[in-house]
Structures are given as structure tokens and as C-alpha cells.
Image (tube, rainbow, N blue to C red):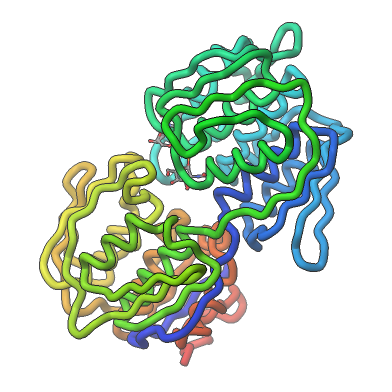
Length: 431
Ligand code: UD1
């Protein structure tokens, strides 16, 4: 298993190009299931989750072609299966997104229940409830969600989500594009990735209004067509590099990112004392004199502070001057990085859904273990600031969501390198 070796203490200084958003690319490639024509998707990031999604589509019979600039053409003209198997769903919960398109186009689908998850129970009950309201019969048998529609076509209806759910909104929005009549999604997720998916679906002929607000209206059509779409940049990747530069007291310029996607994160970085400047297609950050100031925050659905940036900001508070509380309201049990940070010398106390973080002057390098995607990013950042060497284990989590992370950080001067099992522990230094 690969590990990352990091020698801390170097302020980052450089430029990073932001990749396409994982959470936008996944639903967009899966939307290809809604049509028998080709969908061409640009700006797809090189990530394990994308590979898994394409593998899943391939398993269903979708023809996938990748060109030399990594644009992907997905064509679901001839499907051979309507079943998403456990082996693929268990490695990526977003596989649940095939349920809506398959059900809408073919009137039947089977998707393995995702099972346990490192960041809480993460049920899919709201997806299922929505499909039932649209006329599907759904049962859970032998670990699979089995859904079918009598008469093959879902019916539009009004669905009010009890909780804001990103993939739940995307799944039902995709299903509703081919339903009979109009579907109204209330308390819908407003994340930019939902808006990006809606833009792609509209290019495919869908009639969708209100994406980006809490109320989305979808007028079903008889069929969708092929289209060409470029996914938006990854705001979480961007936020992570900004946090890395802030943590190391350095400077960074991110290109290929729209600062409007990052308002909550940029607001907090500014509050902490970092200098931020915004260009048309780029964002720069530099740390002024002295330490960052600790800042309270609460995660919220968009446009609030993203849960996917919570771990990175716990790290920033852990080395800032003063104390702050970080409250996680989106997921239960999303504090697994805290124990690892404590092993590096951080002073963090957990009280239910809130972490009380008291800033310390330095962290010390240690062997730490990644537990989920964003927790592992936080540990890499901790390694960049810690004194001495940090070894981050189980980095397959990071490969699910960060495109070339060690190359991008090394390009800004970080001393970081990947070692595979055979090379470790003889590889002693990363300088
Ligand atoms: C998506 C993102 C993930 C991000 C999260 C919150 C993708 C592929 N992943 O995950 O990176 O951290 O949004 O911004 O886009 N819930 C239910 N029942 C359901 C569905 C959700 O109770 O049927 C709960 C969840 O347990 C959680 C909350 O709703 O507490 C939000 O989850 P949700 O927005 O669905 O997260 P994902 O879409 O899985």
C-alpha cells in the first residue's frame, strides 16, 4: 500500500492548476445513462472515484472512450445490465446515482446498498422515499435496493426533502427529467455541483428551472439527447490548497478556479488573517506576518461552510493563535482526523458534534493513518507544517479525490513523495 512521506516546515510558494470537480464529474458521467446518444465530458479529473464510476458504467454496458486530452465520451445506447454490484458500490457511495437514471429510462434498477461508511451511517432513505413518491416500487432484498415502475414511466410529483442531500437531489433530478409530468424538489441542495449537473441535463434536452435554489422544478420530457459538457473546477481541491498555503505561512496562486465557488472558505481564511486576492479565473493567497488567528466555524450545506473543508480547517485552527470551536452539522462522526492530529501534538477536545481546538505553536511529525478522503487531506497539511517527518498511510483515500496531490504540492516547494510498500521503510528522507 502506498504512503506519503512529508518533511514539514517549508512555506508553500507557487502556482497550482485546479482540476475538474469530482463531485460534479461523477453525476455528469452517470447522466449518460439517461440517453441512447453520446455524452462528451471535458475537464474530468484523474481520480480513483472517476475510474470506479466508469467501471460501473462499463459493467452496465456503457461504451466509454477517453481521448488524448482526457475528454470522455460515454454512450449508453446498449445496456447489458441494470444492476450495480456491491463490489463497486462499496468503494464509492456515489454509485447510488445510477438508480435514478436507470429507473427513469428503463423502469427498473438494482443497486447494492452502500453499507457502512467512515463518516457516519449516511443512509439513502431520502433517495428511496423520493422514487416511491414518483411511483416506483422499492424493496431491499439480499443487500440490494430493487426498484421498478409499473408502466415503465415515473410520475412527476412534489418531494420535500427532510434533510438537504446533494446526491439525493441529483438522483431525483435526473429521474424527473424523463418522468411523466412535473416534479418539484423542495429543500433541494444548492451546491454548485447540482447546478453543473442541471446545466448538463438542460444541454441534453431536460427542462429544469431553479437549480441553485432550494426549489427545483423539472418538467419531464420523452427523451434526452447527447451533448457536450465541461465540468466546473473543484472547489474543495482549491480550498485544500489554499489551506495548505495558509498553514505553512506561504503563498499560492490557484488558476482555473472561480472564486464565487469559494466564498465561505475565502471568508474564513480572511478572518484568520490570510491575504486573499481574486482575479477572473484565479485566486491568490498569502500569509501576512505572524500566526493565523483561530476562528469558529460550523459546517452547513451550500452556501454555508462545506463539510468537506472541516478537517482542513481543524488543522488550521490547531496551529493558529487562540482557541476556536468547529461544529460539524452535516455528518455524524466526521472527526476521525482529530485522533491522528492529537498524535502530532494538537490540542483538540471533542464534545459531541463540536471540536474545541486550542492552537499550539508547532506539531511534530508522526506516522498517521488516513481514514477518509478529506481527513487524509488534513493529515497531509499537518505533515507540511509539522517539525520532522510525517508518514501518511492508507493514501488510497486521497487518490479517490485529489488529482496528483504530491506533484501539485511539490511544485510549490513541498518536500513530499509517494513510496510504495517495497520502498518503505528504507526510504528515509524526502528532501
Ligand atoms: C455529497 C458529497 C460529499 C459531501 C456531502 C455534503 C458527492 C459525491 N459527495 O455527499 O463530498 O461531503 O455531499 O456536502 O457529491 N442523508 C440522509 N438520508 C439520505 C441522504 C442523506 O439522512 O437519503 C443525510 C446524510 O447522512 C448526511 C446529510 O444527509 O448527514 C447530507 O448528506 P448528502 O448531502 O446526501 O451527502 P452525499 O450526497 O452522500
